[in-house]
Length: 175
Image (tube, rainbow, N blue to C red; front, side):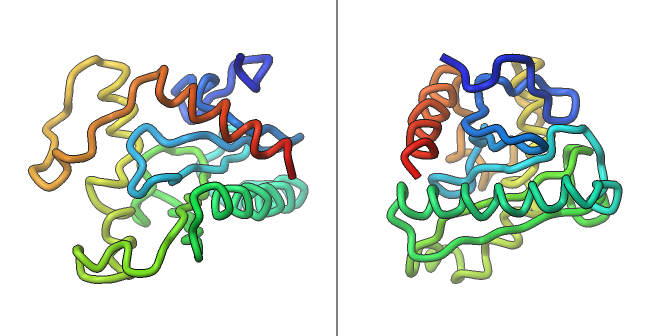
C-alpha cells in the first residue's frame, strides 16, 4: 500500500509508489538508480526548481525531514555517516527542475575502489547521478545512451522501489 493518498510528482514524474515519508511540505522517495544502497531523495511537495524559491516554512520542513530520514537511513543501512547534498540549478548538476536533497548512507572505505570518499561528488554530478535521465528512460521504456561505467547500475523496477518504500515507511513509523 502506498504511503501517499494522492499523486506525488517529482518534476513531471509521478513517483507516488516510491514515496516512503510525507510531511506537510515535503516527501521522501527511494531512488530509481541509487549511487549506493539506501540513496534516497527528500523534496518539497511543491514543484519548484530553485532552493531560493522555497518559503521559510518549506525550508524548515525540508531540513527537518532530511534530518529524520537521514537518521532512519543511517540506522537501517548500518551506515556510519551520511552525504547530504543539493544541486541547486542546472549549472550545479540538477537534472530534474524540482528541489531535492540527496541523502546517501556511507560506510568506511565504501568508495575506496573508486578513489575514496570524495568520489561520491563526481558520481552525483555525473551520469550516475542523472536522475532526470534515469526517470526519462523509465518513462520511455528505452535507455538514453548509457555510459560504459554506468552499466552495472541498472534501473530498479517499480515493484522493487515500492517494496523498499514500504520497508522504509515502516522504519520511519518506528522512530
